[in-house]
Length: 421
Image (cartoon, rainbow, N blue to C red):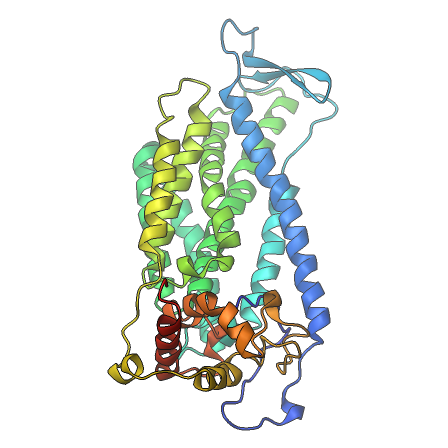
């Protein structure tokens, strides 16, 4: 039940009536699969490069030896890696003369954001009814896409204004305010978008803030620093300090974003009725872990964050565990037959989850999950319960219009036949 391949244009799914084949125009699913793969692969490569550089430079900053530094330096570091010994030095502002070769770190960030937006567009905007819009919300695809884009723009504008306000001089308080606003956005988006759509847009908001920091603050500060040195002027220390604050924000944003990138594999998070709260909990745990690694060079006073994060994950797993949904009395008391279950699965699920999918979205069963016969349905019963009964994450966008009565019957049958559930 975890289909993730896409069509390149929004599909119209006909309900209980035959559709006109001429109206079901879509790109070959094999092509769309490889388009998705290509963009996702580049996004992952550039993201690893960006996040890796961010983590390394924060680590480097935190491990500088600041005892009796040479004139003009704020510290240095000796390191060994790959069979070689390195000596790195950081200037308080800049060297008296600029070196001929100066390496800049920016394209990793830009490429990650551009491929991320491309992936967001291909998966969620070109298939808004399927992946983005919450079933029954009444939103049109154009309205949903407009809300998504507006959320990205508003996220950056509000963040930038807060950082430049007096609140920016109180980093801890600013962090709390930003966290509350981001979780507020998660709650608001979850009211109109599917759980997956809400999660990915929170990630896109954070990603836009991060690349905005690079493009609008960090890079201009670095250019001003270089220009001042080349002109023989005293660099303004305020600009690098501002860039360092934004760089710190990017560092703490990374782990929540990484979770959001993989969250579509875990319907117990995005499919939960309090998905925004689960996202908030995971974000807090991620920040705690990041803070430990940012500070462990000084002491182990934040070592407690690691067991707390582990315990927090256990608690979230308990909270997000599938609950027994309310079912009607007839479904609970009646003995559900395999024939009834198989009819529901055939009508609502096997257009995708079949050895020969009839949906023009897929050339093979998503995730390798096939539900063509009774044995396959019995084997996948726990996954069916989790995805179609407890979280209602499937069918995607409820494109086959599975009814609540059908979900009740599936749940009752699974409960009757798997007592350990």
